[in-house]
Image 1 (spheres, helix red, strand yellow):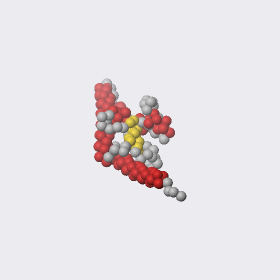
Image 2 (cartoon, rainbow, N blue to C red):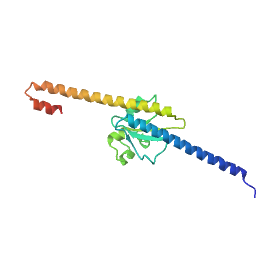
Image 3 (cartoon, rainbow, N blue to C red):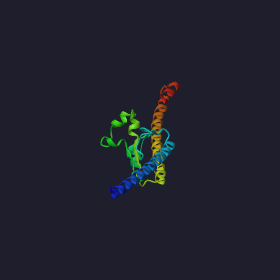
Image 4 (spheres, rainbow, N blue to C red):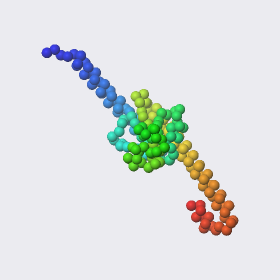
Length: 178
């Protein structure tokens, strides 16, 4: 019989599209892995959520060890497109998502969760810039938390020192400082 030339041409085009999509998936997975490596190296204690082998090639989900993902998102609103928490939980920001609970995440891991997605236009340079900005914001947040803790500790020590002259001995002072 007569060959269906249109069908053959269409099948060839479909094969080229599938091969290009596979190449693009591999490129995005490589960029996602680069982003992950930069963030893990730059933010001690960062947790990568979910499977490392069975995941979308363009998506990275991590939890900050200290602080709030919402604060990081606010700090970087004009520089990096990222989202806090789990995608299915955006309407309930004051409670951990069911997904984060299901994977056994702590409250800090749930509220420190960041979602990062790569697109077709994402470049290696975009990944490098975004990772530097996220790391800097996370470090600012840790620094702010440490300053707040130091202020609270200093305030508590002042109260203790004021009370030392009121009959407290050194053992009580040491106990109160701990």
